[in-house]
Image (cartoon, rainbow, N blue to C red):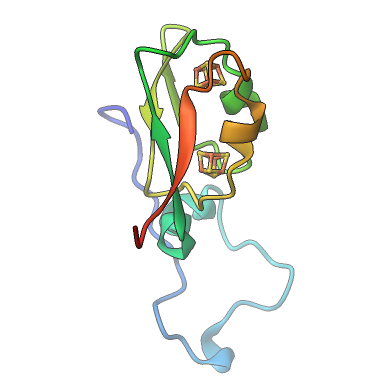
Length: 107
Ligand code: SF4
Ligand code: SF4
């Protein structure tokens, strides 16, 4: 997150009962996905090798959680707060480059 960017907190508190949840299908405010740290679901972690990376940004295009961090047109890292470990980035990375490897978090 860049400096000055608005921090959006999830309006639904943790462990809320069903009576406290918004009616199904209603998104109570914009940007609520920022308050859900999907990285907590992860069992596999993408490990990025900056030396091998050619910044083709295929991983950025395909990552479903916008977890690939890009600055000035170059990949600079992976935001593990939001990466859920699906492995799509590693599959999308060109085989000759293979700059992302999925690693078991328990290993
Ligand atoms: S493992 Fe999935 S969620 Fe995580 S950075 Fe790669 S594509 Fe995105
Ligand atoms: S797909 Fe691979 S080579 Fe391309 S930007 Fe991502 S990590 Fe780098």
